[in-house]
Image (cartoon, rainbow, N blue to C red; front, side, top):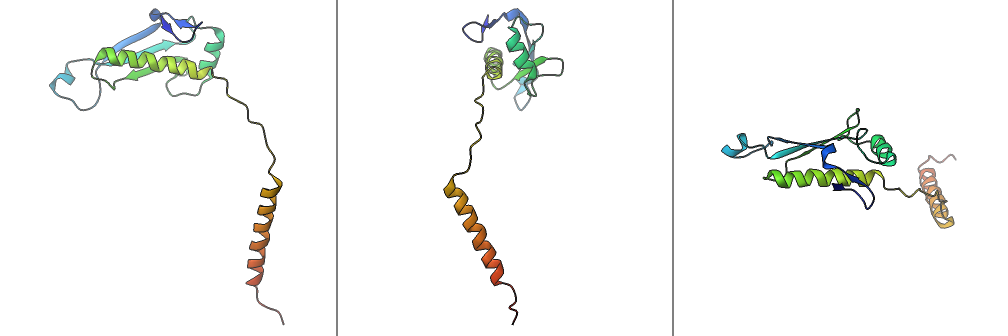
Amino acid sequence: MIQISNNVAIPESEVELVPIRAQGAGGQKVNKTSSAIHLRFDIQASSLPDYYKHKLSNLRDRRITADGIVIIKAQQSRTQEQNRDDAIERLIELCKSAVVVRKSRRPTRPTKNSNRRRLDSKNKHGKLKESRRKLDY
């Protein structure tokens, strides 16, 4: 079980982990071993609560396809086990970040002092421009 929070967990059978060959520079061994991990997780077919499914589906993330499948590629580490742990950890972080309730912004009014500074600046700039005019005798 992959534990998301105290009450929510994903069975490992719902997460598909496929070993693939990692990109990048390497020695002779890199062409033979599959150390990178491709994680695939279908949001709609999962046993997550509906709230999690809805929030994950509406999340604007490049790792989530139009079909609602999360695809994470982990290839930072040299070993398959570390990459597997990294991919699962990133899936957990994605699920947690989707359900975080963001604080709504309260609109505020500008202070009297900031308004006064703005008007003084405008007045000063206007006087500067006025002083550049030609004098009419």
